[in-house]
Image 1 (cartoon, one colour):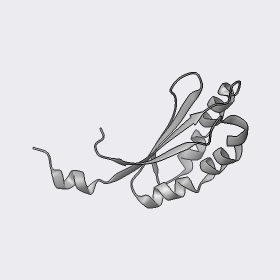
Image 2 (cartoon, rainbow, N blue to C red):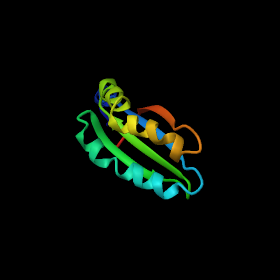
Image 3 (cartoon, rainbow, N blue to C red):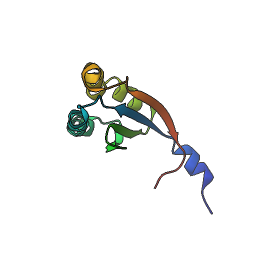
Image 4 (cartoon, one colour):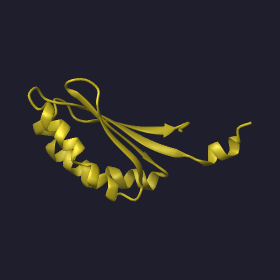
Length: 106
């Protein structure tokens, strides 16, 4: 039987960021997001961080956090700042950022 109280107490939060590269900037977006890994590793409040490709011009970042403080620190951190500074040059649209509540994880 599952321990429902334990699952409820393990509140985890996430961010899902979708990035659409400008035509001809796909490789630049890929390099930009993969180069952010060392910065993500420095963030104490970031539990996991993934950079991924959806199709030839669509990329994403998925992060998880144990609390809102960690998520807000990430949103105000070096990766977010660099993303917003480079978005006009690299992206067809502004980054689409969604806050998530993680319901289950392995």
